[in-house]
Amino acid sequence: MNDERKPKIWLNNVNRNNKADLLNWMKSNNITLVQVNGQRTYGGPPPGWVGDAPPLGSEIFIGSLPQEIYEDVLIPLFQSMGKLYEFRLMMTFSGLNRGFAYARYSSRRIAEQAIAFRNGYEILPGYKILVCRSTEKSELEVDGLPGFLDRATLEGILEEMTTGVHTVSLFASPTTNSKNMAIVKYSSHKAAALAKKRLREGVQVLYGCPFTVDWLQTSIRQKLQDGTLAKPQAYIPESFNSQIKQETPAKSAVQCLQLVCERAKLGQPVYRIKFLSLGTCGWLRFWYCAVIPNHSVPFTGYSWLLGDKLIPTEKYQQAKEMVALRILKDFGYIVD
View 1: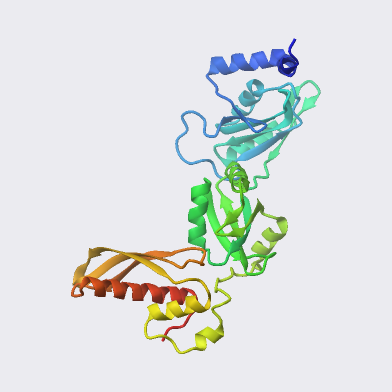
View 2 (view 1 turned 30 degrees about the vertical axis):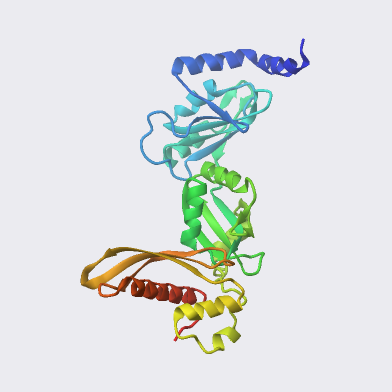
């Protein structure tokens, strides 16, 4: 016999009768179970579910399970308490359960009812199970973020990379000077766990800054509740110092920004401007993107100028002037 086949044959022979019962139950009830990363899942959402996922607090923990019991026994037992949104059974490599599972109901009330009626239930002679509220971690801390990254931009990035973002809050990093930390709350423990895994994949660098991702620490949570976390750092490049600010300003915002970038060794700004529409009273709306070579992110946005009587070159110069003025203000540079 080929040695490579022996482990598979051994696994298939572990608890064979109960596995057969499980397969028959799945087939007769048209149940689909999906196994990923050591857990087997039903639902999340189940067939026919309409609406949002249940709120936090609707999940229970089920412990002290006999290892030879599977979903064909567990799901009907807990489904009898109320509508299940999701059931997750933790599995071993050998095909036995790991002795615990999670059930998420459609409401907190049903979860509390399941705890009251199923905690201490004798599932097999001599085997009483533990049922209690699940400690649903749903908050991550993302530390080491650059100071120029505002909350709205970070939220947009996280929504692209992960799903289930509920709220994003920014604070000064408790571990790194001049960096920020975000506390990100997700819609569920599952969404937070998947987000944590996704954000840890690959190189953890955002706009050139290494960052770390972990569950929200108890000490940080306490500071958050006490209101003692510091406000987020505001990014002003070191080279934009008082000496530059005290120098005689240039005649225009464009020239002033060129001077600042030259002294800060950031490279000269490159502007891209696209005029969109002419509004009432001669106001012209435009989109802009200004790139400073050695600055981490471009400056983009929309603005207006009174441009119905301006020739194209004048429109462009005035738009550049407005964009340069905005960038100088973002850098904390006071323009008279």
